[in-house]
Image (cartoon, one colour):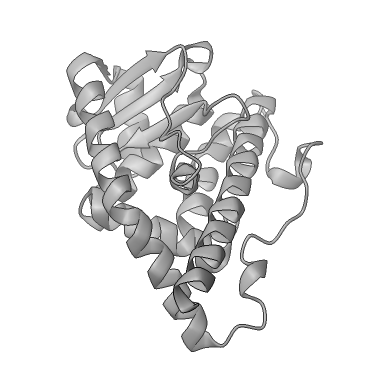
Length: 219
């Protein structure tokens, strides 16, 4: 009975995680439209990603967060490492301007970063692993950008969007600062589940770094 309840709650959290895909798509939309935050996007729907934890005791909350993170971490780590290897093999290095942006947001080894524009960015795919997509962000038809350690996927149609690139470069800096793929995923998932997507420190850092590139000239 306990195992069945645990599985039911975990599936519920996978659904909650999938809602983060929509909110990350709005994050991309207001980068593209020059808006300053999610509320400025006409499609934004106010939602508390961590509402499922309301009324739960701190101890139980901590246990569920640990359970969700530990359950998704092994698959997520392997998947990210495979994607990074593909980008490092086939991607291009940063340009001079991109290297400056990377340095400005805290990337220690900009020379190691590679960018790979692709028609459609790969995602884990399975309904069970869709929760992992909160790490990368997604539109309904797929994400527009994805940072996987030193690799960055950019959808080809958005490959020249500086706001999107700076957002992803900030995630690269976070991978470095936290010590690697597994450490990044552990912290990111914990923040998303505990605090909600929009209120997670790592996403706020990336949005704030990209904000100056979302404004029109002179704005």
